[in-house]
Image (cartoon, rainbow, N blue to C red; front, side):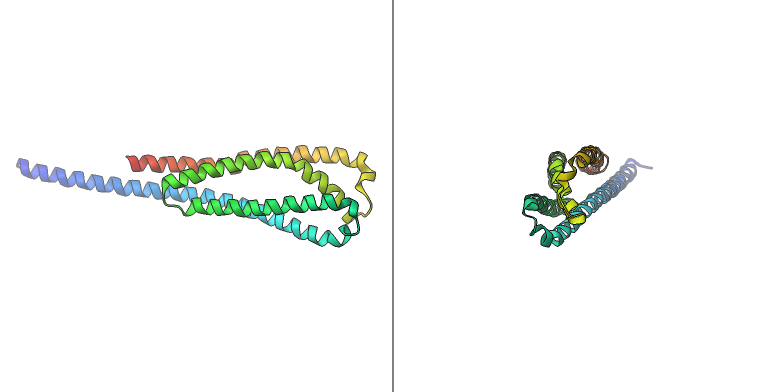
Amino acid sequence: MDIDNMKQMWQQYDAELKRSNMINEKLMQKILKDRSSVKARNLSAYEYLSLAICGILIVIFVAMWPRMAQTPDLQWFYFIDLLLCAVGLNWNIYKLGLINKVDSNDSVVDMAAQVNQLRMLTIREKMWSIVLMPLLICCMVPVLHNWIHGGSAFDYLNAYIPRIVAGYVIAVVLTVWLYKRFLLKDIQAISDNLREIDALKRG
């Protein structure tokens, strides 16, 4: 076999190897992108669940209005609860839009920026959830008590205060666990996948 034939064979082999590597890289990029899409769908599922809960609470509060209209002392609590649920509803809609952008974007740079924005928003959301939870619970207890039992929950403060404190502690623990175990973990997984895709593109 002469040198020219060997060079030609080597060039063919090198071209085939490069083509194979390109196919493998594209396949790996697709796998990583699909993994990110799965995590994004998990995040969307949580937001849809939160959206449904806020929507149901708003419907319940609207149904309470005929009784609340006759109970001026509880109307402040009522409107604070309604406002917090409405804010939560709009927040879920906003986050769903951001998650959908992350899932549908083909640019790794844009996706990385959106994922980082989503992470920061989620961390702030966790903090605000913990801060506002006592207000929501304390306002909801007298309203629900009046709607279910009639009368004033303030006549039963000694019974309600331990329950409110215990409920808040449990809610905080569950909130921290939920964000750490699912939401922030899924966001971190998407970020890791994007870094791997970027590394593959850079070669």
